[in-house]
Image (cartoon, rainbow, N blue to C red; front, side, top):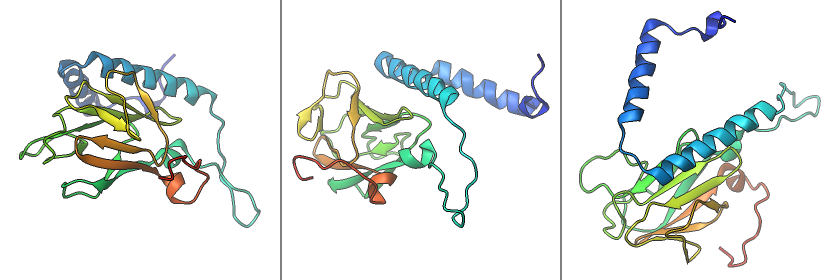
Length: 192
């Protein structure tokens, strides 16, 4: 079976794809993070096959469309305490976000918590699996606290909207588009 014309890649697109794939293969490996990423991708692909199609709707006829996973999953980390110049960090949906401390140079970290020296260079990974957000500590020196519970040495942990996350001396809160728009977010026992 031949691919559709719209699925065929031009030589330039193919070259860019090959370069990206080779870069991915040559990257520094983290077995736990790689395993978590592959599991998340596989789960997302399985859900995509089962997902119902959403049709265009109109406000005039009283029908409403379900928001896409991208809209529902959109999230950011909001600084509650810390010396960083940023107040928020938007989290990518399509790949894991690396949390760490770069030093004074520009870095490729998604969430750079410099100048907090209690944060490891590669401290934690945060990712969206199509249903929810997850975090895994990457064997950081000082651990990662979720609502004051240390998750160092544990497998991936689920992040609910409103969860406070402590990396070193920096305190952040996960907020999602749903929780910001007043959609139902479970009340938390600690009142946070």
